[in-house]
Amino acid sequence: MTHLEGSAFQQSRAFSPAIVTQGGRMVWLSGQTTTTDLEGKDISWDFAAQVRTCYALIDRTLRRAGGDLSCLVYSTTFILDPRHGDLLVDLRKEAFPGGKYPCSALITVAGFARPGILVEIQGVGVVP
Image (cartoon, rainbow, N blue to C red):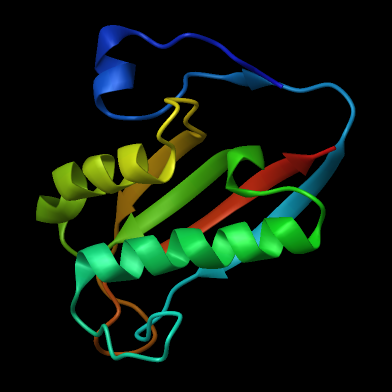
């Protein structure tokens, strides 16, 4: 897997312009959203906790397929409030500390299926 180097803007917003893969298995990830963290604590209306938990759930799924979060090559993130965009960038930098970010899209939506949900993340991974 090769991450093409991003521009200064792309790096500042924590996304890669492209990732080149060869071989491996593609894993299509359903959207992850939650109002409880991994310990069952209510995180309704807590954007940062929901993003961290979504990434943890994606990591769990990728591990079941033989990879981990670093295998995420593309993600679409849906947020309820566009003011959370900058915080999302910080949380993505936290989730991908080596700077090998997935390619991504960020979309603001009018609402989610349940009250208290502020974010949903879906994606595609490539595992060895």
